[in-house]
Image (cartoon, rainbow, N blue to C red):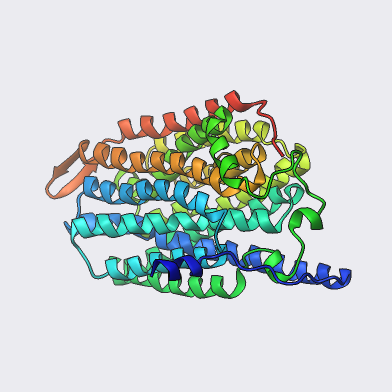
Length: 447
């Protein structure tokens, strides 16, 4: 059995190279677009299967199925297993067939959603949502390795930015479509519909995602684009290079900065809808729509992030990272501290929050670390950043759930919350993330 699994995930074998220059250009263009579009839409569907529970929290609490703390524990199970999975799967992605790897992750995630739609046991939710986190961790690592294999450094920032819009695409879909399904049919249908979309995404990846240029009879991207590393890397030294990353303090500082921005990101993703319902009196669909604004403009942020760094700052990302870090802290503070009945303030604050989060997730969650690391260890780099980022997201879910439940007063069956401590926790995390960028201001590029 293990031999069959091992063989299934073996990298696709190289085939004889195409020698006709005209055909090479045409075939490379075809497969690069196929890889880019399939990972973009495929990873968006990953997010639908990951965020589904976030639009169901109020109905689940209202039905008395789980409490805020229990939901926080369930959410953290995904983040903690995702964090560990990011590291392990990141190291694996450098050695494995990424097409089959990414499709398998989405398939298992889809099955978990389908099963949870018919369950209400707390311990089963923890176990299955934790399993979901591990297999969700395959998606971004496989996507980034695919990006590195098919796109050169000079264009990678732009494509990474456009591709990272998949995060926001998945969020928008979840906050609008899944929320509508939950509102009209119930929370169980939210899980079932997400699972069905996951199955569709699996088929999409198997058809259009591709392992490597060599497996399609093409030269490596470095040769095609004349994009060789400054220091040549021995073909048999990938593992030693991966282990060497652990000694780079700049990578760990970036990982810590990403940790805090992921606390902020998933505070709003996981609890923003409940916050708007409980604190500002919005309905479920109204609250979901407002939060979806941040996801819509997150697309603007992710798409523009690569263009800003590549076209304006000559591939440097420290200055825009600091600027958007400040913007993130300010917009979050306005959103949380503005009283009810200021709809347009809430919407505008989510516009700027979404843009800044979109940029920062690209820079802090990947590009800045990739820029100072050997590209043959790209999967491992994403694993390092990922394990710290999602550890922060997991701690956030537990702390946020605890602060909500322990600052809740129930009168005549209606619960009211004091969000003072949560506001401090969320805004403070944004500020810390911004400050940490200053410590890697002059980190050297190792390409």
